[in-house]
Image 1 (cartoon, one colour):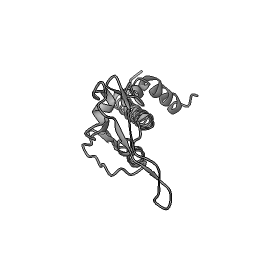
Image 2 (tube, helix red, strand yellow):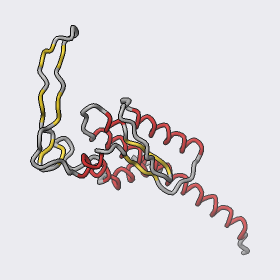
Image 3 (cartoon, one colour):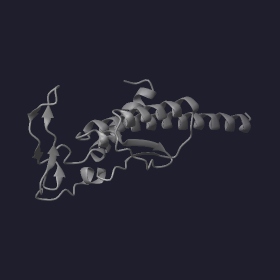
Image 4 (cartoon, one colour):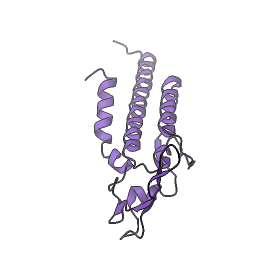
Length: 176
């Protein structure tokens, strides 16, 4: 029996393209879930750190905005993920980053130990502008690490990479 090598080669190439597309969709879904976990694990003071998480394809987003728009990073990541899936963008890697100057300190530690003064908490005012609670300083770090995220944000989320990727791969293959 003769083997049609051209036909076999075309079928093999088509199969490989489909496998790559499915693998990339699993990676996009995994990255988006890790991004969500990271954002939710990020301590909130004024919201800027949480809003400045960025996701990029084949590059690193070096932008940041201290004015913070609630949910900006997550919605941009979801839009990017949808675009990749809809147009079949081919990529080699996905990067999740936060470029605020103090993001590295919150992620890896490096706060003064012991704390020097703390973070100033603004006075609270009622609707008429009358002060109801005086301003004060609050210690938000311990041992050089953030009390809210002592083991980081992205690092903790990345520990779940394998289980998240498996979950999305099973979902893609139709398994629960």
